[in-house]
Length: 145
Image (tube, rainbow, N blue to C red; front, side, top):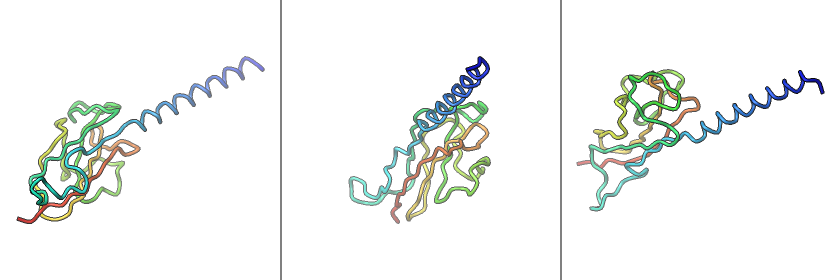
């Protein structure tokens, strides 16, 4: 086999390893809503959740930072969305969403009585979600007073 062919095979293998390593790292990137629990309805007193509700997230394979720190691979901040996700997650998330660009991991939400789906979407400093999207969701019910 010629020296050129060996070099080309080596380059191909190196590129393949880099692509697989990047995909493996992307698979390790997780965001999870850890509070409240999904399908939360009951408290210790036996009544449904009341508003405000403290919503907290944890990440794995990512670093939470302020939006003002720019676009940094593996870093970003949370956005909370209520009851639906935007159709196009390749665009910056809208300002009307619950933006956590201060780098926080928890937020108190004032929610109306009823059933709510809460989504978290992890985004770069420019508010554009990662691709593939790093997201989680929970469903909770708020009691009527």
